[in-house]
Image (tube, rainbow, N blue to C red; front, side, top):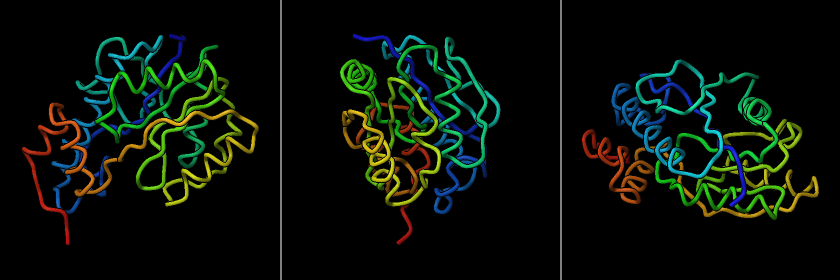
Length: 212
């Protein structure tokens, strides 16, 4: 197993700030509770992984959801691509870096370990998301140019990011495709995939039907 670091890029789970696309059908408070549960499960997976250093790159302030042993850095830069580039740059300490978001609470320590292990033989590891984006990006040697200018939050974001990596001549390993929690329908799907986690518990506590 190779040494690697993990970064979770996240928003403080407070009402009208995190997971706003869940409203409606969820209230802002319920959406924030689902966001906190997703972040809790994500950080539990990170804590259970063999990462050397675990970091949350946070927009907002830490809360009781932050476990011991996880360092916090602030997000910086204009636009998501810039913030991701800076998150890699700020975390890099000579080891490969695996970056994920807070939107895939079904992630497991094993998935993170496999991503880190893939960076022994590949320059990058890429985890596509079902909405056309990506949920994981790992780089053996982080380089801001690999992210800057890639249009984010679009149906072709993942394809464009993967093309950027391959266009730079990198050998890219693929991680399994996962679903980001963006909508009520996503929430139902992910809660079913990880029924034992905090996110599933919150989903069943506040369950709402997806808008038609």
